Figure 1 (cartoon, rainbow, N blue to C red):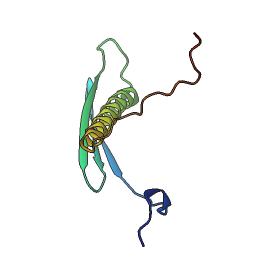
Figure 2: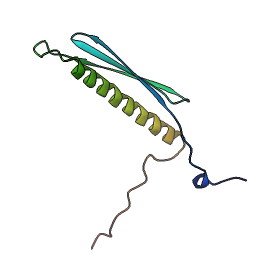
Figure 3: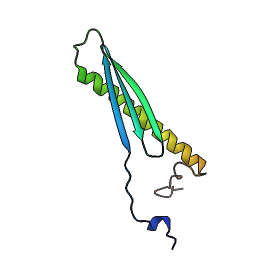
Figure 4: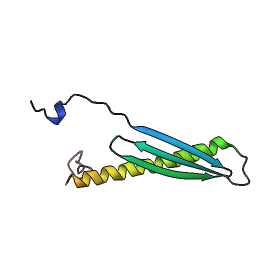
Length: 103
């Protein structure tokens, strides 16, 4: 029996994300690797401490990791947009007016 897409039972997926940090004072580098099971995406970013700032390694870790995760998020959104375009659909439906304009 064939089911409509909306009638399919829920399914679960697990994506693995590894975050690697390396510090070479005054720079911290973060590398994020996302394995979806179908694809592997990777992103890198850095944070640099000013020579006038106190050395607090956690701050460099947070900045570098945050930047790498933001970059990975952008890459995921680009990938989704490409897949949507390849499927022949628009990314977002046209907005619907909430009320009729008065004349």
